[in-house]
Length: 149
Image (cartoon, rainbow, N blue to C red; front, side, top):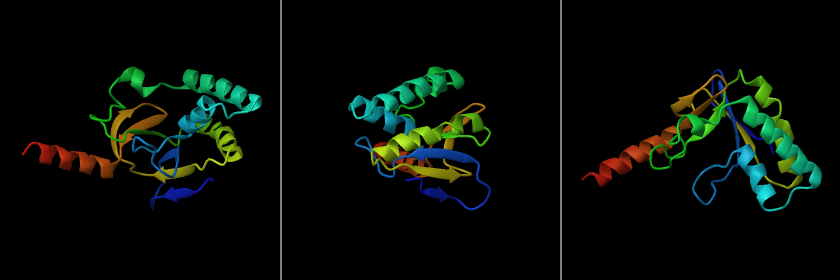
């Protein structure tokens, strides 16, 4: 729990995610991991109240990128797209620890990633970026080259 991977140099962006890919080949983020526990009925009443209250707070505190660009998380257009917090989002980062506590209580691993360049930016606002990871960007470009032959 709480393992930190970082690039050398100044840390700019932060993401909390599962250490392993899900069935769709993505690394589920911290909010998705807690929401999955809720869908599976695994949260205590206190944890569910925390989740609902804080999910509502986050919904009000910052923009869901898919409301600005409905294709931002489209796997064919932006494979592996993932949101990262900007370091200026301290008010958003401050509440993540509660989600990490819920995950820890259920034995669900979540790691903090820090990077100055997590990928090709496809969306940006004052508190977050959404990127296509560089490795997936290269893979997608290679696959589109192969399919055009």
